[in-house]
Length: 389
Ligand code: ATP
Ligand code: MG
Ligand code: FE
Image 1 (tube, protein in one colour):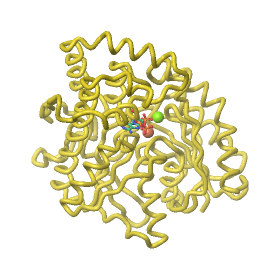
Image 2 (spheres, protein in one colour; image 1 turned 30 degrees about the horizontal axis):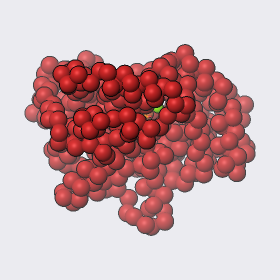
Image 3 (cartoon, helix red, strand yellow; image 1 turned 135 degrees about the vertical axis):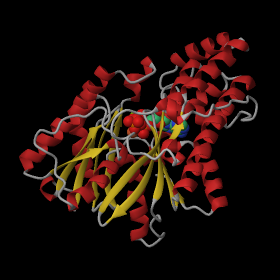
Image 4 (tube, helix red, strand yellow; image 1 turned 60 degrees about the vertical axis):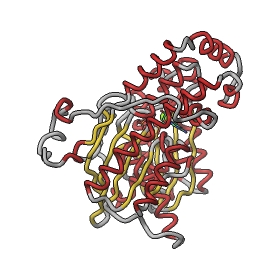
């Protein structure tokens, strides 16, 4: 049951070999952070070019690290969406060609299902060593990353997993808020790790940010996903919104005349090659650190309150958090504490599997391989692919 996974949906080119959805044999990620960081965000054309440059060596490294030859593989798995069209196409074209040349089945994987399987893969690894019982189902999964803030109710029947979409953001994703706030405060890209590191030095109660309660009616999504949902089931539509807090942070900096120190920080950091969050610490006064800590606390608290409320309303018996923002230390601490209070098992991916990787893609492909869910010959990129009903 050896599957080679390939992921190129955004700004990392990744390949990994996973056995039976439960044993990670290799996991190679080529990050494009240095390419995009001068622009403060992912530049789609540059992403495609970097994927093209990296895909062959990254796959080769993953095979080598796994000690496997192409002939040992049982299937090739690739992310088919959601993501940047040009970026996705690099992985898909390569995977198709490889599957064709090797005469092995090709399996298409939804990137969001991948993020969920990052956790399930490691849970399966622990269960195999009988270090831990598997997560009780149904589980509520919070997928929280640069492009997504979604809740899914996760179930398993036989070998196949099912997902019900029970929450989403109506505007920015949580990771996007971290990235935008970091940018407006003159910090590096991507912003999450910078805010995570600097927030530890600030007072999270210094600035009171608040989140409006969003009315589900005002944000009805078109299409089949919105239809058939009972209005009497409020948890069927947990809504997040993270664009307002970005504006609130901007207003705070204007109100407190922070523009000059922000500009100074931006220019000093721009002059440091491979600047790191620790370089920014000396460039932040207490007011800036307090603002950063308060922003992070507000986002984490909003995620936490709504996620635990949905878990209770839906009768979820465990929680799973994944995606880049799941790497956040404050989030892990506060979610873990509340889960302990409620006696609810909770699981996070290791830090390496929180952000984009291909091990999660190979793991998610395993049940599809077992049920012979093979991709059609005309498989193409689906930039807006959604997960679940
Ligand atoms: P998607 O999965 O939605 O298609 P993506 O490729 O951006 O998008 P990931 O690589 O899973 O997803 O996540 C990247 C995001 O995670 C960025 O927004 C980044 O700022 C955020 N992030 C990474 N580490 C941290 C952290 N320690 N704290 C908060 N956010 C973080
Ligand atoms: Mg990424
Ligand atoms: Fe991702």
